Length: 638
Image 1: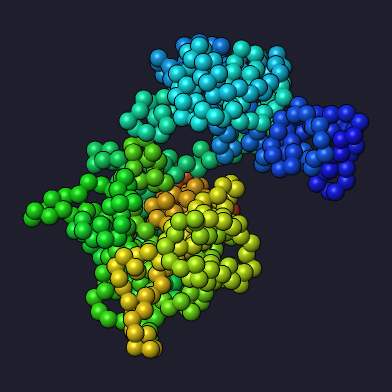
Image 2 (image 1 turned 180 degrees about the horizontal axis):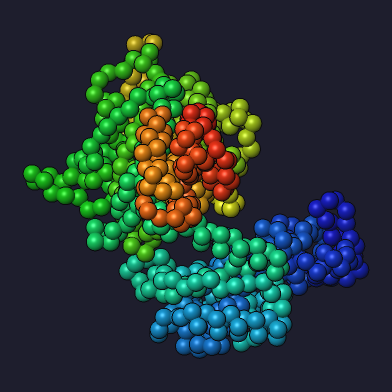
């Protein structure tokens, strides 16, 4: 008799060994239809895994996160099978599931084309129609090595060679295709009916630029066509909102290849938005008790040796410059500079907390293939701050930082957050007592804000625990922006101290924090979140006055000047064009307010406003409109 205990505590009894699939069928045909795998005593297994003793069983359905990952991994194998059938000379490497999809890397004699992707996708559908069984088998490492060598799969051989010889390996076969894989997988290719190949890109073998460049085919896969169609619609909407396209269309910024990759040029309208963001940032930091610093863009390389960046961060740093027989390093971080300012005089326990903030531009090396618009650049400005405090002040400071973080993100229109807490790893600096005290302070601060959080046990940096805040945009995408990081390492490396109440020297606690992360990346997120239609308070041009004929130029100019005098960013369009043409053109420029002036408006010292939604508000006294717009800007409505 085999007893299978289910998650709700109920159990099923069988008088013989059964497969996971048979258990699902015994529970109900509906569950059996959507199950893709199972977990036996917490261990993921295939549906055809045989249960021959008493166990606990959880069925994994295709709609769950675990189930989707299995579907996507299985679809990557399906794609590799299709590639091998169409292009037998292609070498397969690795093909994992990733967020919202999968990829597989291939070594092939020529680049894959869009036509190739269409052919591969068509062959995948044919394999699905064949409904081939997907079978797991196990063998020794040496047996697997011989198998893949005979198949001519050299990359698989390299992977197997890196595995301990005593290990037993699992392989999955479907048709003539065999792949090295832990699994689990869906039981038949017929389970995979909702997928789409998306793109092809270059990728270095094992992520090392010194190795051969492979071709990576990306795709997405879902449990059903409804999920696939929804995701493809999301991709279409994301494409419309692509900040690179909007940045060019709205003349906000550019990336000039002649100047070098990953360097951002802010155009006048983009610079206006950045100035508004910076003004808000400075205003709120003054209110929160911060003082501002300005520090150099480079320093002697010895500073970066002291900080440890030369040892631990060298791959992300540009090469040093030689000046006066010394090496100077363009800065990848701001923190060592703030520590030097701290060291410039002795501090007392009465000085704390010290809160210093800087919009500091840093420079980090990124491989050219990793650069991506404003999201991945080589030069960017961090909204950086460092707090120096005593141990007993940690919780209050973290609470204050969270207050400022959530207020800032909310002001820009982000109300949904995911909070992640990373705790002490196995190897760390600082005493266990201070780690526990600091971690509890982070937890208490999160709970004071009534926020849920995910704990990444052991996932913190070696020098202190941290909080990461991810925001959710209007398309449901998650963006890492805010970080609050305690640091027990740099105060030690730089030997910074303060004089305590007991007259002795003590080590301060250092907190690194950024609210928006980098201004460039945050601007790109805002641009996509609002699809270029910034809220009034952020818009580079808040209103444009449009004349119907030349006879209205004087009043239109007066309207613009009155708007500017009220602090609004206004322009006037005096061109001899039809009013409908002007309205369409400025609507495409995503101007929040269009103010039409003609004979009636001039006579009554008024305007006829059209809002961002195209609604015509009719004849409106100019003073009334100005009062309304100024209030919207002052309240920073989104």
